[in-house]
Length: 151
Ligand code: DQA
Image (cartoon, rainbow, N blue to C red; front, side):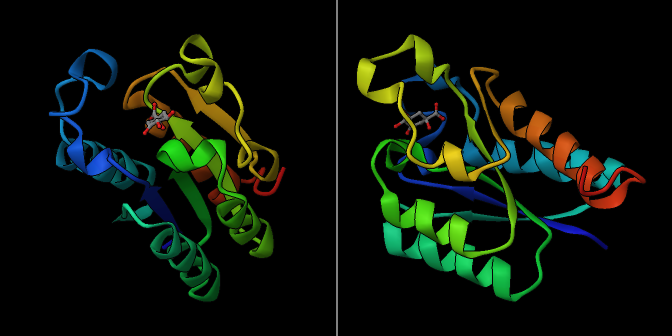
């Protein structure tokens, strides 16, 4: 079965408690339940990593490449805006990745408008709440398993 890894970066373990006006009232466990159900319907397996540490995130990306995982969905949190190391980790694997954000980063503070990760991703999806991840999952599932795989 095709497999997608979902990586959540710093402070996303606090979903539900953290700035609910921006990130909503649902938790990281709620997000994972939603994606598990959607992945099952798409015939895809998903696994989940959350870390507050840059090195852990880099290793989860390397491991995904080594283990033959088919694609990545990554919300790098604030690392989005300055982690060249995470960018290089994605560029260094042959994995297709989509960068996602719960909030619309372009409608927020200036420093959130720029992503150093997005240029090495297939695309960026933001502002749709948890559905940013669902949209990424749907897109990647089509790419890795459909007749148009790779297109
Ligand atoms: C975020 C947006 C980032 O700017 C912020 O640092 C986060 C969450 C989002 O999902 O909206 O931690 O990635």
